[in-house]
Amino acid sequence: MNRRGMSWNRGSMYSLKRLRLLREVSTRGSLAAAAAALGQDPSSVSHQLKALEAEVGAPLLERVGRGVRLTEEALILVTRTEAVLSELEAAEAEIAAARHEVSGTVRIAGFQTALHTIVPGALARLNRDHPDLTVETTHIRAEDGIPSLLSRDFDLVIEENYPSRPARRAEGVETETLGDDELCLITPAAGRELAASGPSLAECAHHSWAMEPADTHAGHWSRAECRRAGFEPDVTTESSDVVFLVRLVASGLASALVPRLALHAAAMSTGTEPTEVAIGRLPEPANRRISTAIRRGSARTPRIIALRDALRAEFFRP
Image 1: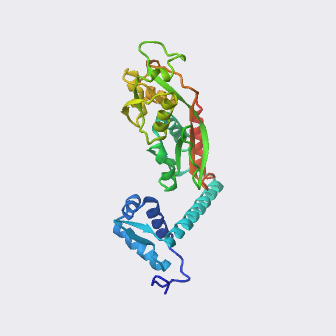
Image 2: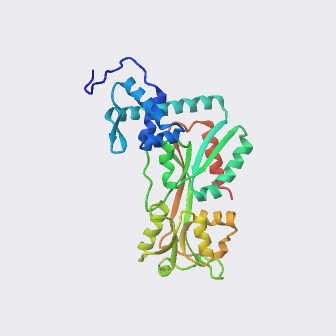
Image 3: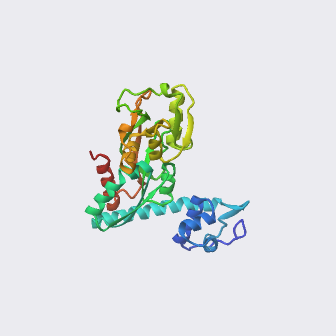
């Protein structure tokens, strides 16, 4: 018997399926969330984890209020499971590379402006060049991209990095830069031609502002930029839909700080032309960096290579 009254099952091999269940509980934070992510019944997940406890010979979950907490033994297993899954993913990549096949299914996620401007053309390229490849695409908040990648919800995410909040490199993630996207001050054009000599940010201090939520990378940067110019913005509209923000500016209802791709997205999706807004001047030029992120070990997978190539070609398309 061990110190907690459970006998150790020596010489047995732990079930990888059950180890993945435990990892999902660790990642999602609860049995119910793990079950929902896996499309299973919570009672089934609980039953399988009890079976894993019997295999391990130690308790893996402890009740904390209405939730659960992983024990020390469980945390050790989760760490080792991550390593095993990474090795299996690398093995899959090597086998696929040896066969030179671009096929199967790849799951990608991206934020709004990327989906409007970069992704459609990339998908068209892949459909033309690799008809045996299926691409599943999901719109996701940029802030949720890396956690979802590490949770294995997606195989590749398109991420953004704003100058006021540099991204922290996550363990087990490999990124590749697509390029920089200029950050712009836009104000209502008021019938004048689009010009590079628009108002400065400080001159717009009295304007109403349309911004992304403060807890997003874009919203944090926008507010920080206004404060750096000497004023607290009067945010009358808050939305993660940057195309909506551009349309508000074009309608004369607010000013905004948006990426250049947002102007292209608005033009492509709603017909809002760049001449309907004026480009102002920031205290200093600024860009957000756009990158593709994958789990380390999958970089040699032909479908990942093909997807990255298509996204890169579309980003730099004239």
